[in-house]
Length: 365
Image (cartoon, rainbow, N blue to C red):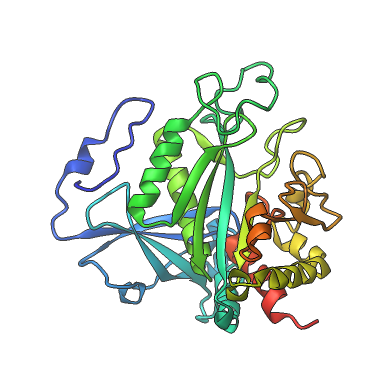
């Protein structure tokens, strides 16, 4: 399959059948967010031609009773294609298709937050909202029980040398990270960078800047690619906000946001107004910032390990223990963006970006 990204799994074998010619057909992998609000599902169908846009693709359906999205007595949930990316695993003209979920009445499914996100991004269109998200994650073994390459009995050395580190004694899983990065570039995902994180076997990559609802689309597809790449290496990816108890960093999804007035001369005034509005809605944001309504994040946002307390709102310049961080360069320039450090690693980007834009651009109270 010409153009496909080659990923060499740990077993050292490749799939020779992927080299077979597929004639004039293409494979389209339809993916959607399931009822958990944090997991992706997907299945493949054959198409006769390459679509020019998502509107050219047929709607499809799936058994929602198996994804916590319906009952078996009325199980069909509809899939509406909304975004197309190149498929880095099958290559050629094959595609990844991100979908929204709809009910049998053709109305957005209750587990479809993208629809409301679009509506509010359109209301705020004149402000030209931009987002950038920093996705942290942790690699686990194939059984998803032990952190990847940690000692079988005991723990690695204390945190310190692992962040942006180099060397086999400090870095585990770099091949997974590099394969994911390249696959995202191939697919057309707006990946901006990657780095090793503070806890060993924990990593981060950045997606954006993206405008409006595109942020959610690109982050969800980047997550799919990450999990699929990890399959090839026989490892698991955890988005748990606090994967290991004790003196270890948790995992977040720091969300950078700006509007056009923030990015222009004098933008600091608009940044501070946005922060004041976010402080007034702190409780609502915490409830939206992980799929459990805040319970998952409560294990992470303790006030330690580069986090703020979940119960208190704070902000500061270059302060990684604050709810909102204003980058040092933004303070110096007087304009730019703010970083919301509260969202958890398993957050839904549609929900988070929607909540932010509602607070800073739409809510009047």
